[in-house]
Amino acid sequence: MKAKQLLVAAAIAASLPVMAQSTLTVVNFGGANGAAQKKAYFEPFEKTGAGKVVAVEYNGEQAKIKAMVEAKKVTWDVVEVESPDINRGCDEGLFEKLDWSKVGNKADFQKAAVHECGVGTFVWSTVMAYNADKIKNAPTSWADFWDTKKYAGKRGMRKGARYNLEFALMADGVAPADVYKVLATKAGADRAFAKMTALKPNIQWWEAGAQPPQFLVAGDVAMTTAYNGRIDAAQREGKNLQISWTGGIYDLDYWVMPKGTPNKDLAHKFIAMASSPAAQAEYAKNISYGPTNNKALALLDAKVLNLLPTSAANSKNALQFNIGFWSDQGEALEKRFSAWAAQ
Image (cartoon, rainbow, N blue to C red):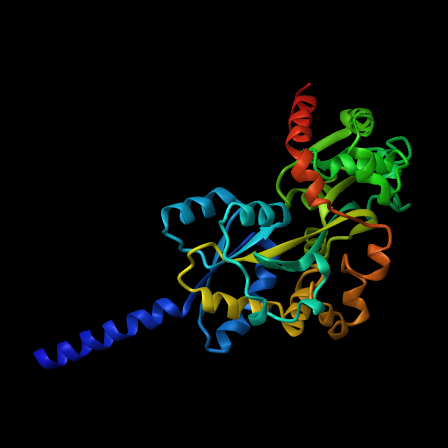
């Protein structure tokens, strides 16, 4: 009996390191995006036998990653981060350098997706959305968004300077290609805030991505800024919400590995699989966020392509979020916005 117990104990002990190595903790923003990742990335990865994925949801708190890295107690292996955070985290040494030879050919990816500390995993856009059951004459510009006589009702906007100042300038007649050049000047920033002030009595602020579609369905707002994937999710639930893509601001989210992850090799395998054309095409079928691996586009039909921020029609008059600009001037503009919003 004792010998049998020893054998069982030995078997368990022998299995423990294997279990630790074969479990990968992947962190994302949850919601419709998390559900799409589960179907396109997590489940197929587990089926390969490479390892089990433990999904964790967060709200982009870079401080959590920093605390883990500094304490040398890293329990997250792969984390989805927004574009300002990959630059800041890379500069601060919070992320492992990505071995691109294990991930794919850089030439296959959108230029903005290639980073020394990670890889862009999808393209998303902040756009204008409206309820087509309530608005029959579709708005086509940010000038329409600001026109409360032509389109009566409240306007939903994310509470913050980012995106709103760009939209304000476009509503005031600035071409998308010139927005950051204008906003970088004192006169341009003043112009953007003046335009925001004109709309202020009609603004209903939102802070969570789930709120804009809820506002539209409830009739709380006539139009709102929104993440295109959230509108896509509402459409899949049968809601008649629509997007006006003109002047949308697109950006990328990235996969990174926190510095000191004990599962670096497995993390590279996961990132490589999630960056493959087939996996990214499957992801795009489940949520309308654009692939960063350009080869994935050939695997998608016209119906799916037409809903992506990266389609030719939808990106024609779009603006790429300028990380450098917001890194340089973001803090000052956000402080000014907070003071303005409180008035």
